[in-house]
Amino acid sequence: MDEFKKLIEEIKECIDKLEKLAAGDRIKEMQVVAARLKFYRSKNKLTQDALAQKLGVNKMAIIRWEAAKVMPSKLSIMRFKEVGIL
Image (cartoon, rainbow, N blue to C red; front, side, top):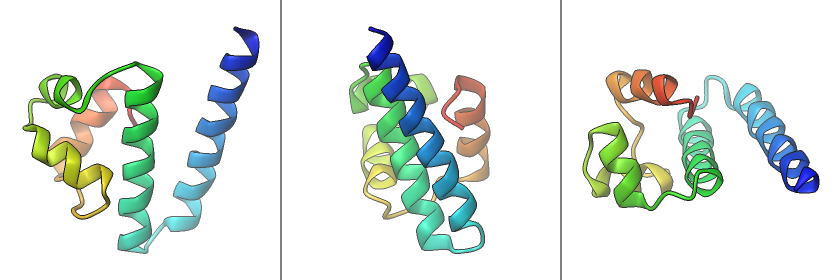
């Protein structure tokens, strides 16, 4: 179990580094958001439906965000911070 927690922390650190590298590049920022969402869902064993309900959005929003097709709204980003995604 300790190995699992260590791996989770390493992945989180890598995503944090990616976020710093992506600053100012909209496409890269969307890719970082996608990685954070996927990581959060995996870590918390949530389906896209469950995450959508938790965030108060529909499943298609999660699908588009995880595919880095669309950047979430500022309101959604604030909600990510509330639940611990960002």
